[in-house]
Length: 62
Length: 134
Image (cartoon, rainbow over all chains, first blue to last red; front, side):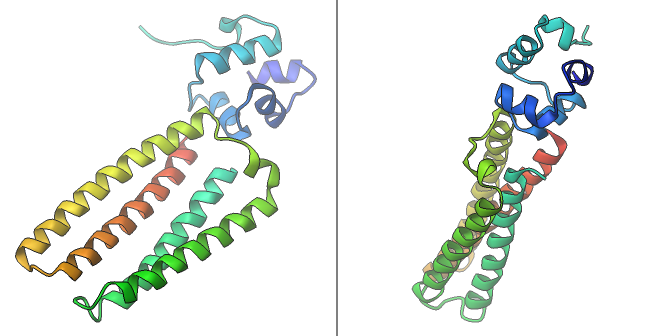
């Protein structure tokens, strides 16, 4: 997500958070892998960057 | 530090300080009428809480107006759940103390202390969860 922010004119964490309806601290937690966002927020982030969900988020499960 | 975390710090400090004030008032006279200790305590909690939240809101008006986001809501819910568990356990202890020493005023003081402990624990848990992300 950090790479996508930087590729989109260096969008700040606060601006991204405001655009998708979460706080800057939540964006930081998502980027650090400490918080898994809701499906709605995930879609909002992906749509904001104009990419698919799996281009932003991955899942390392079994 | 997020606005919610600052708010939780303020409320934890308010509950802790007012709790110490309550204990200082109630402990010397544990069987005394409850109104003399409860009314000043409630007034103190209201004044300190409102003052603390007003100062925070003046310093960060935009953040104060913003609703809780999804992560903050989860944090508040989880901390509220454990606060409730602690309150229930402390109330059971207060009931046991009443069986051992049946004094209605003491039971009331123990119940208020249970509420204070649960509130402090709830705000501290909010701070921990907000820092850990969840």
